[in-house]
Length: 113
Length: 116
Image 1: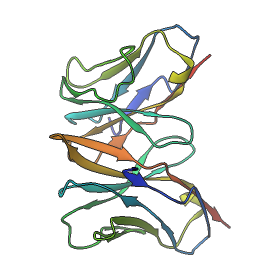
Image 2 (image 1 turned 90 degrees about the vertical axis):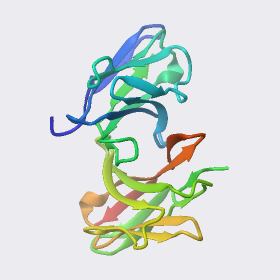
Image 3 (image 1 turned 90 degrees about the horizontal axis):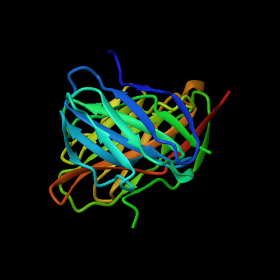
């Protein structure tokens, strides 16, 4: 596609529910990043993929957060047993290589009630 | 210590005027990169401009230029001839190597409002 796409754009979950957020990177981009952006803050790094390999997951806040990219293109960020503090915008970005400029999707706004 | 510092939570500028958004950074990596992104109310982060630590000249992209002062660890964004559509959040970001791994760190952003 022309840009990075994410779905859903908005998600409301009850506390304790599991959610799955999808990211479709720019075609051919090897690198894929997930970020969490709290209200009024800058994005904070969650995890990084190079093709299908998850090379860095140091930013995942707890073991309730899990990400995958099984075929090296589409990625899914899963949050299990959501908590209110998980409410944020989740941004996905892709780039041709890790050192190259990242291009972001529109984000998924998650609200946990 | 903050890796990326944006000291201006909000800025106003008159349409057609120039505006400078401040960014200072802190890193011990000699080979780092600096980025500016624009985030309109729609939420998408839009890449504006990039400066590598070894680049001799300041980066420019259309109305955007980066005032890179390496010794001062400063990477200010200059927007010339401001337009109403420039109203948005602006984030400064840095890429650095930490323990052999590339890390990306974003500042807290500056909200710019362009006045008609």
